[in-house]
Length: 279
Ligand SMILES: [Fe+2]
Ligand SMILES: [Fe+2]
Image (cartoon, rainbow, N blue to C red; front, side, top):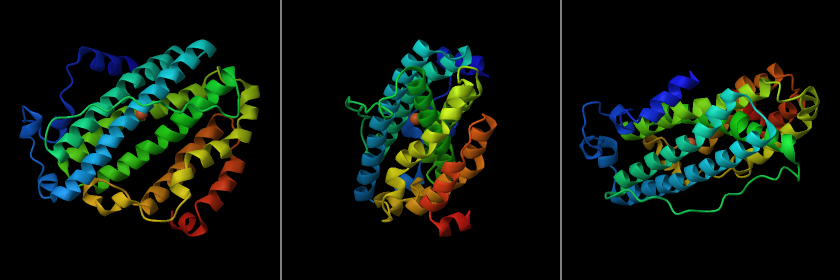
């Protein structure tokens, strides 16, 4: 699976992402998108800004995977984990390209490459070495990327714009690998029994930090007014995040011999009882 993925990316012969929306189109400009075309100019400008911002965020995720690669190369991981984590740097640059191109389509005009920006590398309370690397891959892959897959699926389901669906589906196909690699590392001998015993004391803090923006405010998100463009409401994003936690992430920790009971307890309160009852 990993070999196939790498071969496909390295030959550079994959069809352009926008051909998912129009297999016979020869150029991006030829792809028809009645949803984008029917959107008023003011709203298109706002959606262009959202996607342009996303392009910059994707580059920061590339930076995150770059530093995660360095840490794992210095502290140890399986060959398969190295292959996927290093490939993820390239994948995230590709996601930046997709986002910038979609922003250009909304704006009308040429794609603008995002400016460089510094990244915030997590310190995990001053932890070092192999513990830091493990916390890093758990937060980035087991939490962020696993949740991102479910959020992308929810956005694709809701979107009506063919180009938005094509962009999100292409990004999702990579994010699945980025999530799986975290679980693969957690199941590997590079995570020792001592670390499996220590991780439960970190998990609640990692999840709470990860969901800070989503849970810290109840106000609707400004982008909620664009559901047909794949923009999820805060409530829907919370539902999906909670369901992913309960159905995928917590069972994943248990399978890896890591007790997530405290995190489970925290989530019941953090995601509000009415939300828990609705899932
Ligand atoms: Fe991405
Ligand atoms: Fe990713």
